[in-house]
Image (cartoon, rainbow, N blue to C red; front, side, top):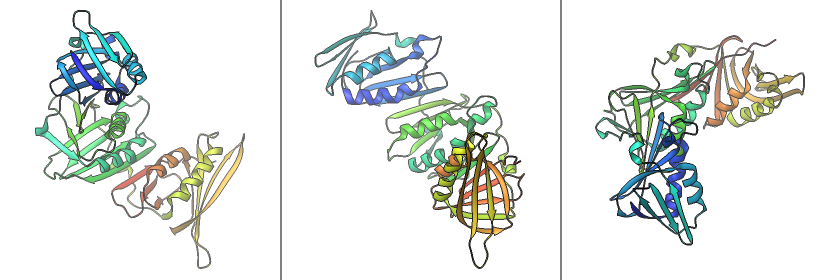
Amino acid sequence: MKVHVLQENLAKGISIVSRVVASRTTLPVLSNILISAEDNGVRLSATNLEQGITVWISANVSEEGSTTVPARTFSDLINTLPQDRVDLDLDEKTQSLNIRCGAFNNDVKCISAEEFPILPQADMEHAVEMNVIDLKQMIAQVAFAAASDDTRPILTGVEVKIEDGQVTFAAADGYRLAVRTGNLSNADSGSINAIVPAKALQELARIAGDQENPVVMTLPPGRNQVIFKLENIEMVSQLIEGNFPDYRQLIPSSSSTRTVVSTAQFLTACKAANIFARDSAGTTRIKITPGDDTQPGIMQVVAQSAETGKGESVVDANVEGDAIEIGFNVKYLVDLLNIVDTPNVILETSAPAKPGVIRAAGREDFVSVIMPMHLN
């Protein structure tokens, strides 16, 4: 293998695939990056067996070949080199990769590419196209609600359902739920129902960047995997097996109080409350009082801690229905309000012991449910 490539292109590709390199593994090759010189450039791949990323970068290939190079050594070395041409020359017998750039001359010990797991490539015959901007927004508005621990593995994923040209993302961790719907450009995309790890989707949003072309999603038949294809990147992830909970029954069909409030003001009030609530399991009181002919309705956000004190914020609100006092984990409110992109949000409540529903005012494609906390 003999390759000539620009340092900045190589460094960028390494930074993308390095995110899925296995940090703790009994297979040394999984700590390596596969580098393959082909007639049209260089292919970099990494995997931890649950998730894999492949990046194609432009290069001048004098001699084709492949090997796997230790990810940390390779990354640190390439990032140290000047922005100049990097020459890669592999000695296949010794599996030693010579890396030259300007005054720098390095030899790195590698592992044969034959030991590296095979990563599947996207099958365009069963592909679904998604607009990048919409996809990144859907991921941001749903993935935060997935569980972060593996107590119930099914809840660490996002249910991705495609039907009749519409895609629905849903995530829940037992205390909160987020659901986002969107339309696909290819309405005849068929039906798909899969559970994709939330971490994989969040990684996809990061590497998608600002590309303009749609992201292509495909599920290879019988492999329990999903592949996302971008302009010069492919990402593969294992799917989570099992049945996702029927979240529709968790969304209340009616409410006794409907409160419309400024998203920014509600978020600021919750951040202030969190200063005190973090010492009391996040418990925060939301007191909602309807207005009358002389004054508007108000929402009071109150948190108290025996150690640090008490904080209270008052936000003007448009309240329809009964007064109510309900408790929520303020961290969940902050997480949710951070991803709402409308000026106002709607909080629908029925009783102190029943879930609260938050919607983005003016939009019908997003809904979130938060379970209440017991108030003394």
